[in-house]
Image (cartoon, rainbow, N blue to C red; front, side, top):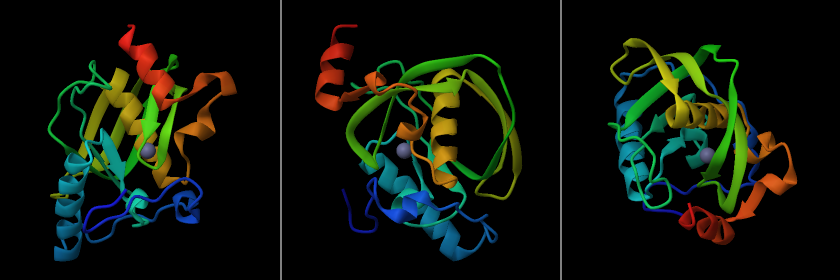
Amino acid sequence: MSTEKFTILQLGHPHLRLTARNVESIQSDNMQNFIDDLLHFVSEVNGMGIAAPQVDHSLRLFIMSSRPNIRYPYAPSMQPTVIINPEIISVAKKVEKDWEGCLSVPSIRALVPRHQSIRARYTSRTGEHVEATYSGFLARVFQHELDHLNGLVFTDRVEDNHDMMAEQEWLKLISQR
Ligand SMILES: [Zn+2]
């Protein structure tokens, strides 16, 4: 998948497996332009989120852009949020499995265990230090995107191969919900 500016790296590309480096100069024109381009791109491809390493920029930066759509009717609406140099400070013990997909792993859906809620710390695109609590779907998106910064994809966390489905079959399943 690609648009003018970016190509999404697909599973198997070695750069998806790198540990990304911290963003140092958030306020630079280069970085602010990159953030604008990535915000534009994630809305173009209808992503719930995208991490910089997915477009071959090995930086600790991702966007969360949850909104309901046909595939995730229960997704909350939010302003797309740029998350820079994120850390998870604490997690709820409770772990839940739910369906995930990824622009870098096309046509596959899987049940992935994630902490039900998390407390996180990150820097905003204006350089502010932010602490926030996320639960449910947004906690899931945050954990999924943070994994990309550490060279992980969601299929790495699948506990049982029976928890994986072709998207075509998954769409049948959720349409019966
Ligand atoms: Zn992903």
